[in-house]
Picture 1 (tube, rainbow, N blue to C red):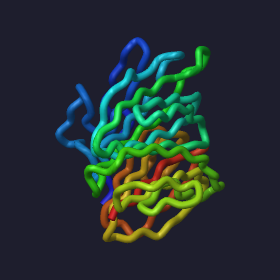
Picture 2: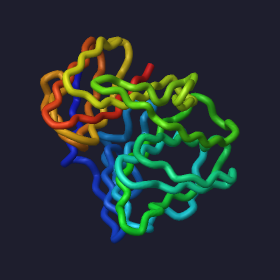
Picture 3: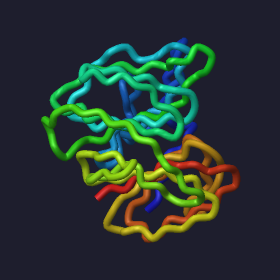
Picture 4: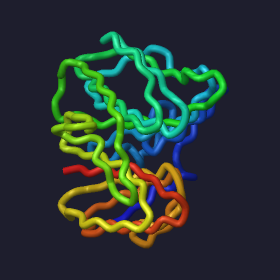
Amino acid sequence: MITIRKEKDRGNIKLPWLNAKHSFSFGSYFDPDWMGFGPLRVINEDIIGEGQGFDTHFHRDMEIISYVIEGGLEHKDTLGNNSVIRPGQIQIMSAGTGIYHSEFNPDKGTKTHSIQIWIEPNKLGVHPRYEQYNVELKEDDLTLIVSPVGGNNIAMIYQEAKLYHGKLKNFAKELDPQKSYWIQVFQGIGKINEHEIIAGDGVALNSEKQFNVISELGLKILFFEFG
């Protein structure tokens, strides 16, 4: 079964410094039909104004992944981490027993376009941790960037989940129908299993055996595998 979460139907929160699109219920945006997808709880796509961002705030028992599409995102936390992630990098933070952090656009002349992902962990009360990796992207393929065991330029996550980056043209992949998959499109236009998709769309796949992509205009995705 394939379900399309259309970009135009996502929650949209606009502030003077922020334009945020929410694929699932988050903060003041609530949609009982879209509370998450398995352990995937949040996909927020944010446009953050120059020199603006999220002041220090608290998280607990959540796996938080940040991916920057354009610009930069400066992270500071109570573990003493202070770094900026740019396109081609991924950041993961296990909130565990509790952590305070802030996220700002460090650039005065450029907006930041980023995606933040929350995944519920399968292990609670872990010691908080922060990791940042360079992502070595492949052409017309899926690049593993997050997994339960981690690896070279692969972030580790406390969940039976994998996350891939895809820069795709014409691509096919066999799927395990016992698993579930979510695709978040963040650039381009194309088709996934014959369904028309554009940037901002999400695609849920359950009990599917095949994943087929035809890119019509520079298609880039995040591909989640659960189970």
